[in-house]
Amino acid sequence: MIFFVDENDENIRLDSFLTSVTTDLSRSRLQSLIKSGAVKVNNSDKKPSYIIKDGDKIELEIPENEILKIEPENISLDIIWEDENMLVVNKPSGMLTHPTTIEKSGTLVNALLYKYNNNLSDINGEFRRGILHRLDRNTSGLLMIAKNNKTHEYLAEKIKNHEFTKKYITIVKGNYPLDEDIIEYPIGRHPTQPHKMAVVENGKESTTIVKVIKRFKDATQLDVTLITGRTHQIRVHLSKKGHPVFNDTLYGAGQSKVKTEEQVLQSYYLRFTKPFSDEIIELQIEPDEKIKKVINYLESKK
Image (tube, rainbow, N blue to C red; front, side, top):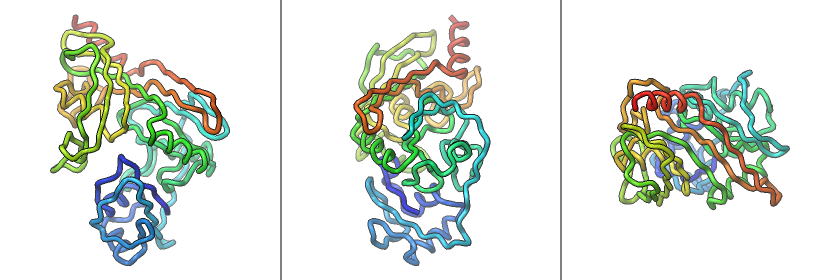
């Protein structure tokens, strides 16, 4: 299995990364494989504690009797746009983008395998077939999927160079002070809670553009454009500004009276160049049911 580290996975241990992206091998088993030379990073042996970097090529040779197959599942897909090389799907809130060592069913990848069989890129391994970029489980919206490795490489380069536009709609707690804002806090792993990201001095440069859509009594609806694509970027930036995303319990919002599946956040707009052409593809979807539910609640409180 071959994996290429991107900016959202770097700065964690090699064994932790492999635990998150491979089969149900335990962390201790993966550590043994790393120590035995079954794992190469840029064609070299590394320790389990090696901190992976953006651009690293990781090769893992798993013994045949330990390989776990990800099963296709007949799960409905909301396909917004498609051609022979890629598709854009609307991922619902509550669905994992790809399997993990703990959850191996019910994910977007399980659904993609059922519809497209092996006609999906495998650059990022079996657990991430076709996956170019991710959305958190409870963030809904538009995701690009690559059907082959050539397209995957093409789109990954566009993403890395920020040559596409991705917008989100969200609702945050409190009255956001500016009608338009540019947030530029550096983001990295939380120093004591590795499952979280945080604004840290040595973090990666991160830029988020915010525009107010509507103000409510104790909340604000925002249009958010990502210039960079760090893990949890919108949630971290808005929390740092003192206006966490509505119902985002991980970053300080807490659950409100109107219950939803965690953070009220949707990737609603994509603009990109169709692979191997000059055609511009522009896609936009309506707010999902979670956002509508919260807006209706806020409207009723005026």
